[in-house]
Amino acid sequence: MTKVYLIRHGKTEWNLESRYQGAHGDSPLLATSYQEINLLADSLRDVRFAHAYASPLKRARVTAQKLLDRLEQPVRLTIDSRLMEFNLGKMEGMHFADVAEKWPEALHNFRHHPDQYDERVTGSESFAQVITRVGSAIKEYCRLNPAANILVVSHGAALNATINALIGTPLPHLKDRGGLSNTSTTILSTSDAEHFELECWNDTSYLHKTRLDPTDTI
Image (cartoon, rainbow, N blue to C red; front, side, top):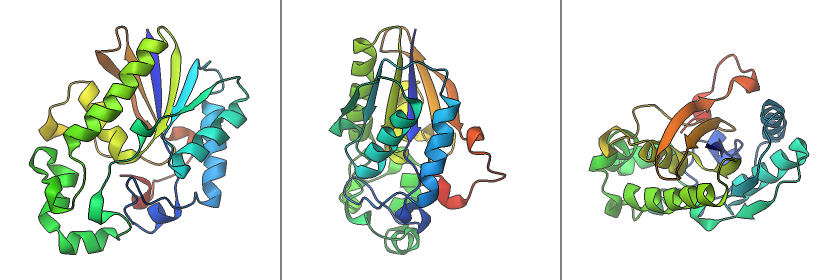
């Protein structure tokens, strides 16, 4: 059985400001995020990883590097552009409220009805495109590392869509589980690199927060 530990990057300045980052925006991690990455690493201390993979976007790449430094395991890190965030087109860099005012229907469907989302309105990727590229990467990692633990550091929107698709969630219901929080862990397992089971969704218990801020989750 192969287990995939899927990590959303640490919280950034634009996350805090409720701005869309997407595939081209990339703001720095908050100072507090480094401590949260250490707490994440401590929660994974007993897991031995065969390989780690990360998006090339700095917020994910730095999260992965700091995480591996803290784990103190001789784990190779591969940077893979397939793990980049959802390309959000004209929404990138904009505040959530401004996007809601300019493209209310498109934003509502992006957040709640993926099957009705028209990516042409904002010039973004489609859900199908994101699921194909990120899903193909995760399946490849599982084929290359059978019966092992794999670490993947990526982004909230891309991971949310792909994880749900891998476990067979129909497109209209991709968002039913809610969002993924910064520095969260979600775990998938597979025996054949094609069929996946969800073992853990959006765990942040190790961060010891009494409540999550709305800007923590997408």
